[in-house]
Amino acid sequence: MHDLDPSNPTDFPFASAEPVLLLNPEDAAKFRDSGSKNTSGSPQATGAAKGGNGLTFVDLHGILMLISWLGMTTVAIYSARYMRDSWPHTTVMGLKIWFHIHRTLNFLAVILMVASIVFIVWNKGTWTGPWFGMAKIGAPEWHSLAGAFAVLLAFSQPFGALIRCGIDDPKRPIFNWIHRSIGLIAFLLAQVAIYLAISTFKSHFALADFAFCFLIIFYVALVIFIVVSEVLRFIELREREKISAIEMQTRTRGSTPSDAYYYHTRKIFLQSSFLRGELCFL
Image (cartoon, rainbow, N blue to C red; front, top):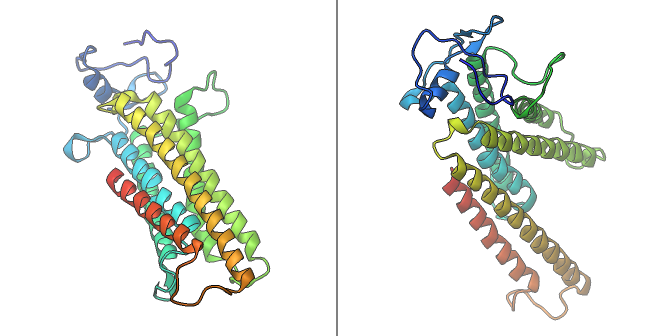
């Protein structure tokens, strides 16, 4: 069995002892996931067993990665950047709420990423990304490469956090920038991998066009939230500096709140809207 599309050389040719209904995309997808090619070009069983509810290991791989990167990691990064001033006087086990959100969600996300990698490796049985001597490197290979680097960088973050210096250490800013840079690079690589997956592996989505549109809407909404949050954060910091400079000469405790208070209130509303949106996604 051969594919008429010359841009898809990695999945074909196929050989099967069972009849395959080519006019049914679902059957074609099930057959493609039932094994990977060996050196002779014939499918070879690689543990492409079905999970519960008819899900394949490839489907579980995608689901866990979406939950990890679009859900948990996004909220974890947002909390570290914009929620440090939220609940300023509340701590749990001596740590602020934003830090618990950041650490817990990132830790759970890494666990899901590792499980997702196990599923896809068990299914494929081999590395599917770019390799030496490959005649052509397409979107599937770039997806594997970007996803692999994203998971490796994310996996390294908890270990890096274990060796961070104290908060008053002169080298602490260096650690902070390294930690932030690695996290940001991992997040961006993951978004590249997700975009390539949704636009390339359409047979694994019941509503491929809807999934693609949803991803674009998610990116647009995320950019809007980030821009608005940055503007409110800048204005709030500026107002606080003004108040500190005049030493509250015209304000006393219990009187009319400052402009910084209003901007802080708006920021809290924005944060709650962001968290509600992420919960709806999950």
